[in-house]
Image 1 (spheres, rainbow, N blue to C red):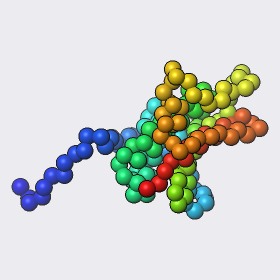
Image 2 (cartoon, helix red, strand yellow; image 1 turned 135 degrees about the vertical axis):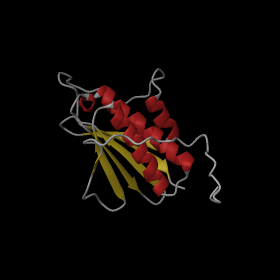
Image 3 (cartoon, rainbow, N blue to C red; image 1 turned 45 degrees about the horizontal axis):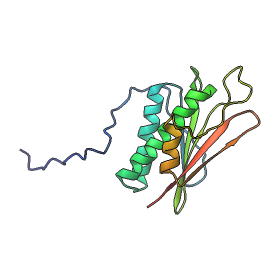
Image 4 (tube, rainbow, N blue to C red; image 1 turned 180 degrees about the horizontal axis):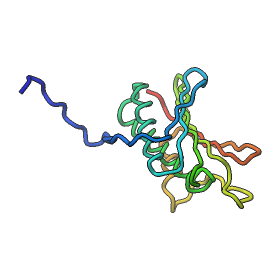
Length: 163
């Protein structure tokens, strides 16, 4: 023994495994103060990268493990929703994730790349009892909303409490 005491693991803290390097995630630069962001691709590995990044950002904000896990779960739900329902889920497409920190709330935003080819009007986010993603977002966040652009891109934003 070298005299160090091993740190006990807390079972409710996710253990995130390193992912192989690839083109994603890409860090966004030139953002306003108190804002950070990444761009990810359309694979399941990219969803895991979002989960890891959001968890680390919340821990960096000294929000605690429980709030970091909640924020990471919301991010996974929003990105998975974008991949499932929009062009961002197609091979080679991207999703943008940003976090803007305020004094009392942090805003987690996910922007997709518009409707899938051939879809005139994308389905807008809604709460449905048969899908748990947006229900989780509704339960964990203070509020959530969305905005769309003329090109059809949709940004979903969830406001989460800061400690």
